[in-house]
Length: 181
Image 1 (tube, helix red, strand yellow):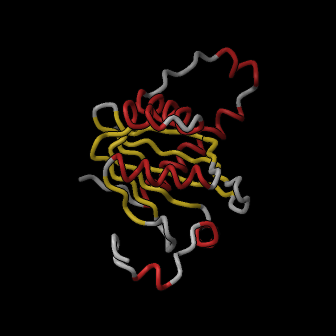
Image 2 (cartoon, one colour; image 1 turned 90 degrees about the horizontal axis):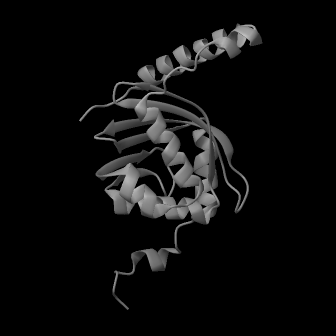
């Protein structure tokens, strides 16, 4: 399995930021005259993923975007943190995000081989309280998302928010065996 390091992610973000800055420096007339660059197919896939996510279209996420053995890593020290394996676990995580009214607005996407680096604004609406920039590294295989690794801009704020919204059950309930009395 391939891994992406923070160094690689930051290098990709820096190259993309430099490209955006260079494009912004062009006079508007030159930028308008430049032919549009062809979008990498993996970037197009992630744009489609974000549209399905925004519509809370779990069927599209399952059927069109997620590989059956997807691996989604959520860093942190909170109830939703950890590695989700398989479509069912990832969709269960997304259902919890939907319960908190979580939204995402892509800021920029860049592709390099099977990887797409994404920066987006992610915020909560129910309850409000978390609004930060996130970076995701998506690994694409056979036209599907095979792996995603989240990097929150403010891990402490994310941990505090998720603990507030998804508290652990009281101790006696947590220790009761499943299916038990």
